[in-house]
Image 1 (cartoon, one colour):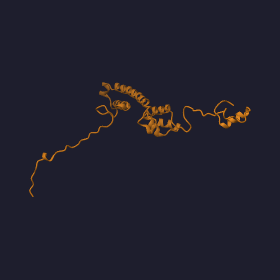
Image 2: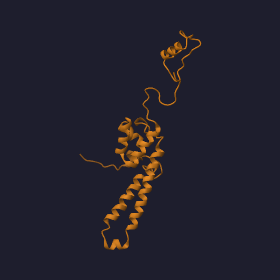
Image 3: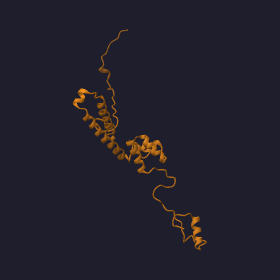
Image 4: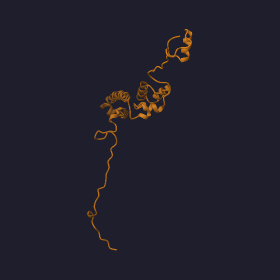
Length: 188
């Protein structure tokens, strides 16, 4: 029999074949081996697959990422989390794969910038004077929108003072004493 991990029944059967009918428990010991990687019943998605699905969602679209996830039995909500760089829907605040997502967005942004430059070079003085430039300017506008959308998340939601998040301003009325008001005598 080849070497490997066997059940206790198979182990005793093989011992019987070599002439040991009743093994001495003090001499033979069955030890459970700790294996690295997934344990039995563990359904965690490997981090490399999370990164690939997240990058696919950014570069090829959500449908491509959903199709890939379906092949591995991964839910659409998990795809949404991977697209944000998170490992699960419960850990959106922890984004260990954010660098992959930012890298994919930057790659698309660079491509959009090159297309924007080409579109802008096509708008010449001659075309402005003679032709319908709305199509060319539409391409330039679309490319600039793509560049803005693919910009890193660090620039989004920043206030004027550089902090992220919303700004709340509370106004409280000043308390004025009765002596500050004019007294009007009323006749009844």
